[in-house]
Length: 368
Image 1 (cartoon, helix red, strand yellow):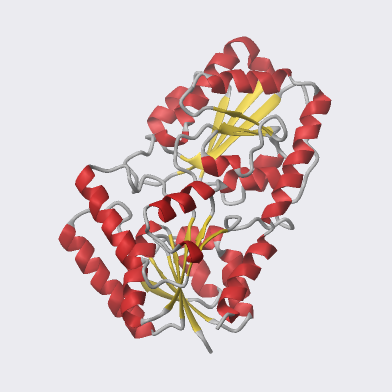
Image 2 (cartoon, helix red, strand yellow; image 1 turned 30 degrees about the horizontal axis):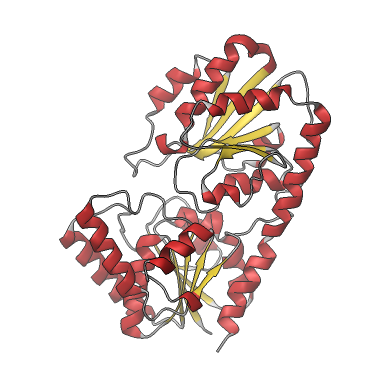
């Protein structure tokens, strides 16, 4: 039985975004090892049959000695497992996992969902990160990117061989799980934002727009937030601030929702006013597959699923005031146009069918 390690900075991300891949690999009789931080989803992964090894990896850690110690622990555990293949997800596991794989000569596939705040550091740290990326990616077999900006950036910086860099349609979307549901419009338009509760995701802009729109259209609109808390990120918005701002408008906040489908189906339009370096936002994919129009910014990852004036209204992320205008534009839109956008969202989402994504990973394993 061949052994595969899935290395990511959280079990949560593996369970929520890679569950279909994990199930597919198990069905193909691969032995799956998880290398990650322990969290509430770890037990769910082990129940599926995965073997878990805990790695306390600090996504934003910069202490030299802590990082060297972490790298040594990763080396020890990967050497102990002695896998046939290593799948690395997120930037730090991509760097550290690839370094170890280079030493141990392990077949490696890296997948970057988005750079996020990786390079939002001082000059010296940027140099160190750049050096480590370039060093670690010399001997990898394949590198998947979910948007062309990240792919081109890595090629231009000579981080990865152009022949090994490929574009992939994100984690894929389970079209049987996120089924198209008719968008039912009533007198009250319901907006929904699905995101981690970070300032960089534009949540405060959303709340400000909700306040402005509610002053004149309170009976015509409802604003929903499905927020995921992440205490490990300094950028997180404190709950007391969120709750205080939400009271200024017709806004309801739902924390750490386990099944997002009910909220999506109960909404008319999904909003993501992000300034974050998104890879390919899953919230937009899930909403598009469900048949919901989108309002978002011109971040490269968002543009892969949000097509301006087709299934979405897209605006410049540097112009926060454009969010209110676009939400009002949707409110005033004729019903037949809203229905058109809903159907187009579902049509666009079909390109990201998870079955197509899984096939690429299986083909990589089968390739000698």
